[in-house]
Image (cartoon, rainbow, N blue to C red; front, side, top):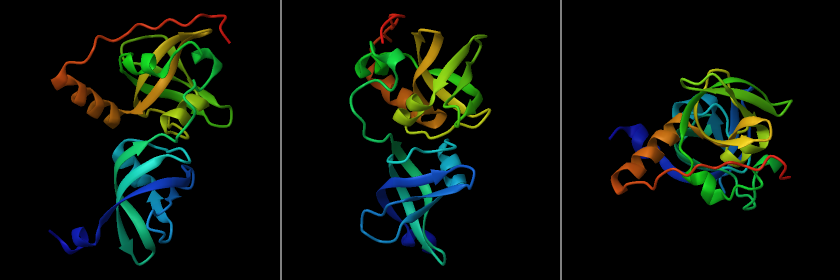
Amino acid sequence: MSENDEQQREVAGVVKWFDGNKGFGFLTDPDGEADILLHANVLRNFGQSSVAEGAQVRALVQKTPRGIQAVEILSIEPPASEPMPAIADLCMAAPEEVARLPLMPARVKWFDKAKGFGFANIFQQKADVFLHIEVLRHSGFSDLAVGEAIALRVVDGRRGMMAAQVLSWERAVLESQELQPGGAAAPAKLRLVAGAL
């Protein structure tokens, strides 16, 4: 064990703010110490380019001459929210139904945070999948980068395929590995009613 390893500790903090353009943000320290710096590179090593305010982050942190910094992300849980769909198109989908949908590998085609939406391409499919900013927030993201590898749970919305949940590629891989040994239930097919608002 190196000297640096001995100085690291695990914390479970909440994202105070994160700005992908600036390349950093801060977590609150549950021990009441100064805020913890979260650098974009540490977040990217976990497989995400952004993280939503209020998300729960479990990380290894270390004291440096510039203050306490996160050195490795262990897990990210989306911000606590009401048990309701992120947007009206998902009003017929219970969270349990969405969780049973298959994860589909995708890449971000483009996403404009200011406009609040974007699109992704699912591997080996031509149609675009709509990405809404509120679905991202409920999934623990604040933004997406062009070309970012993600996994989606997709439903048929009023205007076509749309993401009901977004996961980082790494989190999706872990989730699928956890389901393999116990034998996951067959994925549910979910079709939303077009007129339901």
